[in-house]
Length: 274
Image (cartoon, rainbow, N blue to C red; front, side, top):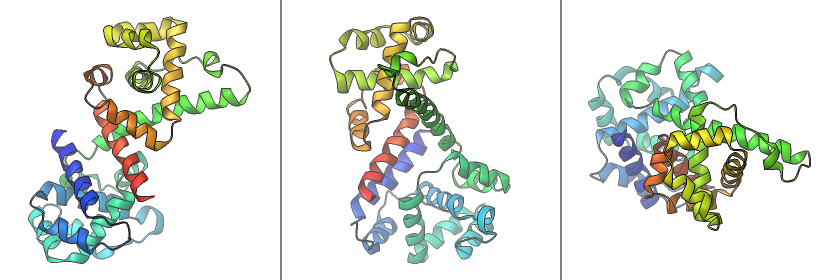
């Protein structure tokens, strides 16, 4: 997993360094072709993301970039050939980078479609941790389910809406995501509820989970702060996660926190390229 995040960080770093926001990719292409940090892992991940987003039989019965798709299918088990093509053809590099900027965030629907086509082995060879991107979907689906339900209750005119929403029947693996989001919002945005913050910092996960299921006040506060974080504009969401980046309590509360790095970087990228 460490290699996975390192590879992503290199790609994002070079895009940040070379993209000029004017749809002129010459500088960016040269950067990827010349920078020594661009390893085989970086190149193969770019191919993998490209293949997953442009293998379009599922929609159009025809691939959008048949030449590159064909090359990937023919040589995915010979990565050195894909690397050679990368350094031999600027047009290929342009397509791979453009795809990452526009479609770099892969979701569960993409994975399901590739599996339905029986092409997951290709993705796995190009990026052995390709299925990690399906786990960041856990974080998002938990957030979406809770926020959607709270908004629905709020629209009915209850006040305070949060107090009327109960999530005591959610699966236990949802709790870490709820706790860590509530912690970030209460500690770095609200800042005044020090008792709640201290409660999260001083108790282990088992105690906090039990409190979430059985203590109505703690339950309501946790959902309230978690909801608060997830209805913030992307810019503020990213800012708060950046503030919390080195706080060890986040990782202690939420074993899925590593995957939030992907979500945060996708939001950051969306802000830059919108």
